[in-house]
Length: 155
Image 1 (tube, rainbow, N blue to C red):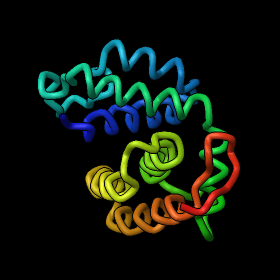
Image 2 (cartoon, rainbow, N blue to C red; image 1 turned 30 degrees about the horizontal axis):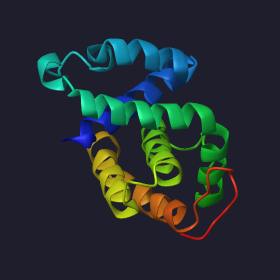
Image 3 (tube, rainbow, N blue to C red; image 1 turned 180 degrees about the horizontal axis):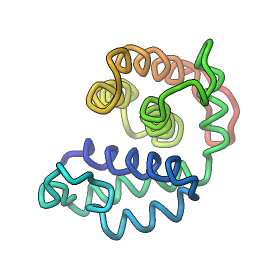
């Protein structure tokens, strides 16, 4: 099972929603039905077919983000020092949104795995320092997460 592509799909939906100033739920429904819409022209559409179990995992992340996006963004604001969302690259912000969603609302995924996968995604899609930045912020969110009620807890 490759959850990497599931995370990637949610990341791309978040990015498209931000770029188009469109509701994430609308973008997610469209991309979920046609994942190839999230790819750019240089990517092989056939290689981006996700098995059903990976789509279920992507749906879990997307649903948790939809229901808890305000708490997720609040946790990220608390963890990011010296930067506002407007100053950050959208790539880094959306990688962190996927990671924070997993860290806070998908407790069956080990936090070390989530942070590692976020760093890899940041290195793939972000700038030169994205991996280090995402590692620092995601690790901070993992250490001081929120429970399902939005209350801060120590991990």
